[in-house]
Length: 131
Image (cartoon, rainbow, N blue to C red; front, side):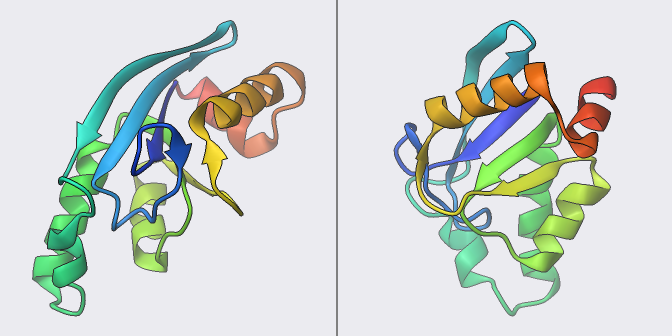
């Protein structure tokens, strides 16, 4: 199962979904995880999305491109996400996971792996079966 992390530095989950110009993608199995790739949407912040906010279809189309390019991921860790973007992810079968505070990607992966192997909640069991 692929997991994406909204990040500014490639090390921590520290960015809002729409603003994030970079996502680190990992493959998670019951045995562990491995880095797959970095998906870049912009250098630094994704200003194309930020600057089109409130511009209707132009903004919606830019957000949809990001969602589509992450559609092979089952979970996306982030610090914040707007309701419309969360709904878009859900329609693609992607679970957005908001972190309360900045967390290292490695730490998030270790916690997720432990949850997968001990007591996954129903939503996680469903994602694992659909993989």
